[in-house]
Image (tube, rainbow over all chains, first blue to last red; front, side, top):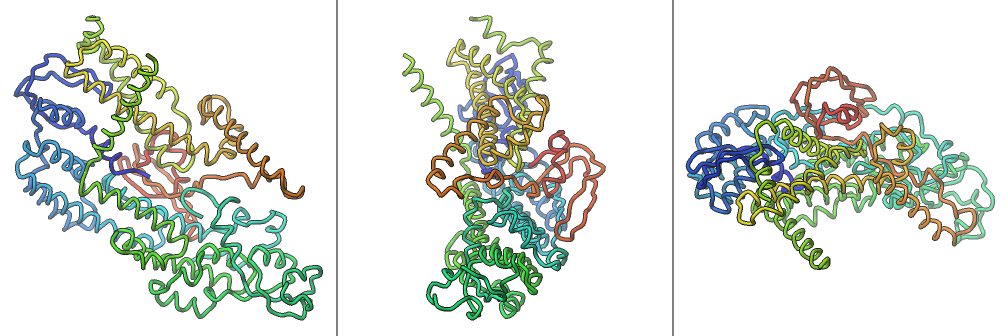
Length: 202
Length: 199
Length: 219
């Protein structure tokens, strides 16, 4: 199982732009990459976790990613409504990034509340779509699904119930193995089922 | 039969399911088993047509072709019809605690209805899935619903609900960060403690 | 002391080569962590990468100890180390949990593998053997009091195995021409093509070899 906080943890590796309020001419050589130079007033790219740390210490301002704007999100929403499939989003972590930035740097992001609402609408729409496709998938008895453009958090929203249900269904279908008998193999080999239950197909 | 693990010897659910009783009758004389019917020690098995035995024991006698059994109520043709008509209205737990597991064991036995039973299990599970998923998603007040789920559905439901609660908390409060911070804090405390111990 | 600080912060650009490697190693461990989290079976160990990261952490911690506490970059380095430690501990713990759950079958499979193909690291292998021994001893102390007919636990009964048919979510890192999916429902096989970058849900068994080769990432 994956906790939503762990997915947010992965989202923190995404790169965003900040405007530092301090000067540091050299790069910071992190294991995940080198970032810098930091010049007051000049934007640069850093991982989100770096941005949040600096922002919490009030040594930078965070620039909202391009997609994080009410009109852009509305467009996405319309596109999502019109499409039968899941549309491709500009980031794999739209929900988490919005949540993190609005929590730590709400003053840096104009129209924060509207953005929050728009992102929640997009999420709700996609989750509703996802849940009905999950239901259809189970009903149709398929064994392979394409999940293109679904984000990790969206996928995690149907875990564990979706894979668990499929696992249970498969086990109900499976041919008889003596391993789920509670007796010696000598007996279970005799107690074979009628031939009809072997050729089960729906 | 659940979650990334193959059925195995220590499975409590499998033990419980194999203990469910089934009504059966002997078709051949079997000696030295009077103790099974302790209430009527006088009669021998041949003359007593109906007796209730646990599933695991029936398998032993079936192997010797000395017994035949009736499908338990939950799996007979009347209930199969009910379930096929609308599985969502049935209180499965009341019908059979281990509806699917016991049913699967039954369908593996030599019986003319075995195939039908298996088909009903699969169809019932499928039909009830949407309902289970919806209940797991809506956290409030679903105890009455929960009570109607069989043990397998309960396992799936419980895990789904825990995950849903995590997600809901995340969506309303965010704070994944807080948890990680707490972890780091504990780590620092431990380190501080360690260094003090070292001193 | 000042030299160390400069090495840490003002590394020359020609050191980029080495830096790339550390970054790569970190990415590999992150991938291994997710794969391990979602795969039903224990995967081949990634001790080389983990050890390499641990070395990095150790070196970095040594350098950080010499830095002034007020340096704004100290926090960032410390935070990154905590993040990496989180991944490593979560990864190792996930593996230990699988070793404990599937101890007997893990050891049996490991016995069929050569040293180069081992799935368990030497330390994990030692842990698994001791765990199995302790479990056996525990069973024996209890079963000793049972009648003779029942005081042995059959080897087969002790085996708990992962269900390799469990469904997993995955992302394809490169084009794969043919993946065979056993359709238990219809008792037949399906063959599909996995496009580069596509995401799917299917039984783990169908992609297990690709997960181990790195062409499929569990998500």
